[in-house]
Length: 101
Image 1 (cartoon, helix red, strand yellow):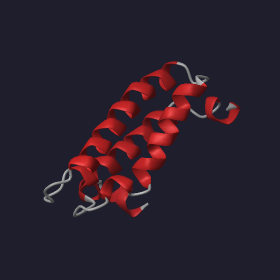
Image 2 (tube, rainbow, N blue to C red):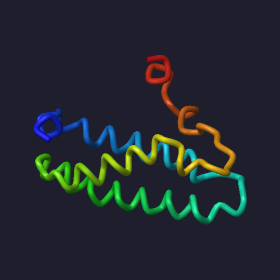
Image 3 (cartoon, rainbow, N blue to C red):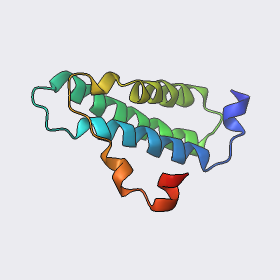
């Protein structure tokens, strides 16, 4: 836990933005009948937003870190992308310097 609390303050918001972008890439799709994974996406986004505010305010809050971490793992492991067309749209809007790094 100490390692999380000692990260630069900008790390948590940057990580949260990355998690949310991965969820958005899967949520906004042309595929129909994705009620289960839509619900998972929405729940993960709500969980991340709620607990990210806690982590930013109190970096030593272990429970909030656990919620953010678990939601982030699910955001990145493609669970919410199952059964749907996926296109990494957010990568298209990155500035050239960010995309090339």
